[in-house]
Length: 233
Image (cartoon, helix red, strand yellow):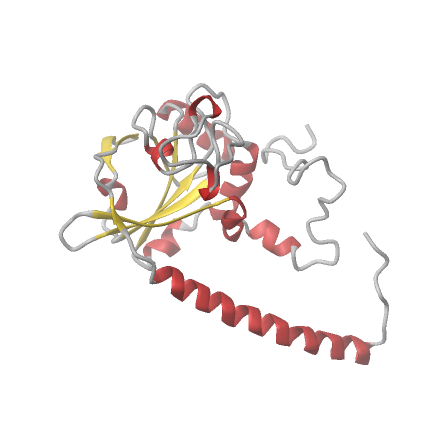
């Protein structure tokens, strides 16, 4: 961390007000970006995806429940893995218990992973989470939505984050869906990489502080992250 620039209160207030102008401009641009995102075209989901859930086999449409919108967090948990990804676990700690608030705005939230359902539910219990989590094992959902790359090879969806690059067999992401009046399911949006930062309240809080995320000296960003029951272990 660099030595902070120390000033008197009057100079601090002047600098803060000047920065506020930038923050307001950023907020307006973010609102405009969100509006443009809502105006993006959608594509009909043609494949009949079936998922293993605690209440039996369910379709993608079933995951909406009574809501017209569905948000999917693509949680990295491969079919043969014994634990979920520590970084995705970090993210999950931040959106845990948001489902009731999202439901009030006609939206369902669910995590989807390739691991067998019993592993997902056991890990959810270990972590103390309550959000809905279903298994896409064998149905190709992760491949089709750009987060699963068997043998670290490109798929028909290309590479990760709309690129030609492959970073691993499992990667994180967020996808949103809309149920149309005729019952069809439309895929409206997906985001990956830094695009999922918006779900991480901890990072957004750290971004308000003088030290920020202070990950510059680490071998890679998030090298410090542990599963919530492994700090101090």
